[in-house]
Length: 409
Image (cartoon, rainbow, N blue to C red; front, top):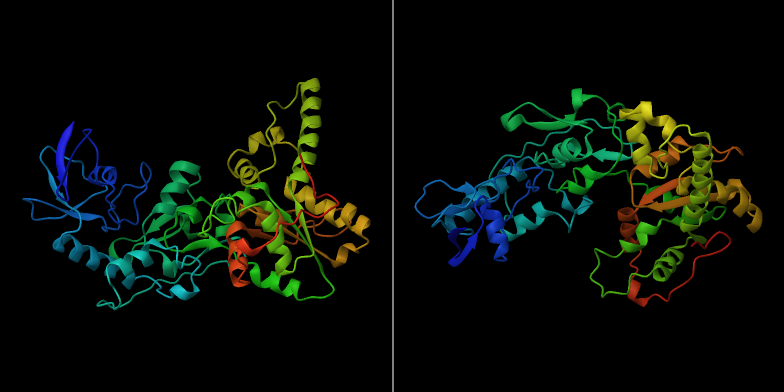
């Protein structure tokens, strides 16, 4: 064990522990932007600098291991001054229009700047702007990129896709797709992990809310919403509400309050998927061909196989995903049962995954000539929609899913 002192508190930790990890054991938070344990430990942002007694130079807490007798000051005047300068430099290459950023209020850089009292920038602002295909489900705003490398590392080390790369060096460093190719050609599976791990909103899903508002305002359109199971467990995780408020009944009520005509449960088509895949599996077991069989429920997984392991496509189930099965049922069975013409139905899916946006577009037309799913919203988009409508879930009375095809096991 190694004995040290952090902010006048003594502790013992295992050899090899970093200063940041040791401080965390004491409940001391050391600010950082780029660090991801085991994935991105490159000390790129230099925000986690701390002072060590007896040393002139500050060190980065995320990459510096503790040593016997070390005395660390995480927020000394010197550390705070250098940390402030480093954040100011980052902000000088960052689009600071926070009011129009999807991460506003949930941005580590914004929070850090506030904690450090940065209200004016002493450096000239130089923001990089790159062309991007804004029709693609994944949007990258180069003006907000802080070059933390999180997207690059998560894509390479965890997802194994390597679609991001570093361009240039020093002050001119930038992140782009490999060989600077269009994102639509970069073999992006749309897993969404780079969006999740981007700290500043440089990566986000395509915003389809304006189209939804237009549809809701059209008196000739009947809006039918399907909700994926994962959405109901996450739709209130960013709201300060007590446990038990985030029920599916209140979610249905919230969507009804917004103005959607029918709210249905994707669990129904998940049951259909199970039956279809089960029958297909039994047939493959009988014929002893193309085994093992892989599920086709996840469009990110389907994209991964298609782009990186096409030799395994024969083992992929031919069954549509629950989203697409539900979309097909809405424009056929549901339309017949409700007496609504399919061309007047707008089918909207609320899903946890940005790859669902591409799936809906790729499987554009069903046998009847209608698009199965017209629009896909992610959980984040739905939360922004609820906030825009000033809907407080605590004041909602629970409502059941609509029928037909609103139930599931």
